[in-house]
Image (cartoon, rainbow, N blue to C red; front, side, top):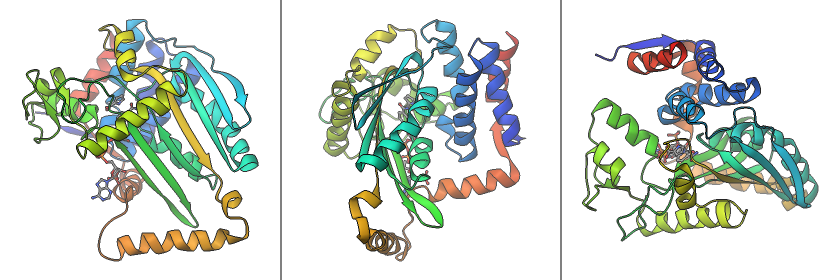
Length: 338
Ligand code: NDP
Ligand code: PYC
């Protein structure tokens, strides 16, 4: 039986940090990763919370990741900030590039942060929220591994390719969405497989291309896109924008680079920032009011905004801590002890 254990957010952070550092991760990378993992657990995004410690440590032990890589910055054009993660994890590269992205977006109206050569496991909402916290509109996207079949196909071509967006709001949480362009994140299917639970039809196909509710069969077959041909086209766009356009690997190339190691995918990420003050000038207030009218029209009929569940979970976790399955905690503890 998988009991649930209550942990404070400080305990979650300390556990993630310890598991990473005893396995050789440099302190600054480990802190950046533990911060994001703690945010995921806090917001009840279970596929990208403490569970990710397992794959990060596996990736470290595979020898693929440089645990002490130093991100390096270059400026190929005024609006483009490029950070080469040098085969380290993406989060330190994002932290390195964010102040420059913000500065350039304020100066030019819009700017791009291009992260190359990074191992990428994390949810994108912490990144677009950080952009919204600066009063900017944010977008982020990244490939992963070619696990997802195009609509009408049966073999993996696309990654689970998340797309995230944030819109800053005065005096309240930003409008944020962040979703995989597959029907669901692969991490969620992995969690179903760990717990021996079936998955809904529509998430994936078995190795013979048949729709399946067996999580393990789908992990060995192909995942499906969300919204059929629409998710398929968006997934292709992300391969192009955050792969071909930025000079980094597509999901198929990233999977080939992994070579069966089962490490975190290694590729690039594209992050965009837009300054509403620059776009709108003295019409800024009118633009903000237009946005608020839109949000009111959504919530006014009982629908919810994306991230409302997450923000509510955040408040609850900050008050009461989080509940984590004993099996996961035991698995992480073994990575510290062995
Ligand atoms: P979900 O399908 O669970 O949800 C995605 C978004 O939809 C969230 O913003 C969510 O808000 C919102 N949402 C859900 N239900 C509703 C509703 N009824 N009304 C309005 N909004 C709603 O996420 P995915 O499984 O697709 O992705 C999960 C995470 O996995 C993402 O954070 C993504 O970045 C990450 N990921 C990372 C990858 C990587 O390579 N780094 C690859 C793939 C995924 P709320 O949270 O409030 O429910
Ligand atoms: O859950 O699909 C996923 C995922 C891929 C890489 C990181 N998360």
